[in-house]
Length: 317
Image (cartoon, rainbow, N blue to C red):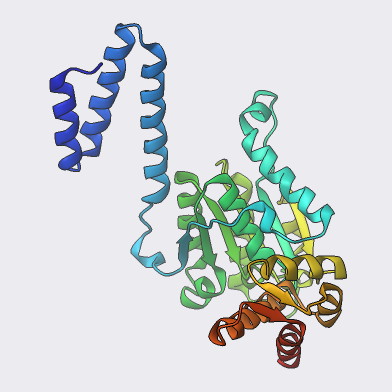
């Protein structure tokens, strides 16, 4: 085992928050164990240190001050099993996960994993949730770039800021979500197009094509018809999101209310009442029903509650 002096030095470096010295000492301990014939232990120590270095780099990304508030970092914990979508859609998302996990195998055959993804569809249909699930399943932070704010705040400098963002993508790990992407991805041929936005879109096309990181880059839009056609071939996959079918509405309601007894609640009737509503609307209606029950100190959720809140969501449109 490690010598007494090595152990004391390790403890001192930890107390002093000297990460570099701690890692150096830990690797010395690993080398010491290897010389003693304990190669498995040495390998485990090295693996722990390497993983810690990667995790530290992932979490401690310093954004330039001028990008403050434009890139939001979260660490989602939403498993793939919580994603309620059509089977075909889930299969395509599962393929993205599988290729990422096997990216080194693909590289050994001269191939790249799919990682530049375009998500399109109405609000509340699961685009942002998909990005969160990908980040959660891969153990990566989700870094959301608020494109509309980027354009509004830095009109005239947007292309330069995009370069900074892609520099960050090249240097750190994560799932990078360009939200409200149509703010910069609009068709360059439109009559009301602004010259500055054409330059921004051209810059984005160049940056995403030249990016060689392993990160997953996602562009999400509520208005795919507004996007420039040149964008579509820059992405490895294009997923279109629609309002949930009856079976998906039923599964979603069942999942959301799983921790409550369902008094006189017919999932079939609840799903019918949720027709033409988005996943997001149904989610909010179920959560409102749960809050009602909690505040009334009830352990059940009724069909009447759910339908009432679904109708409230519907009337808001």
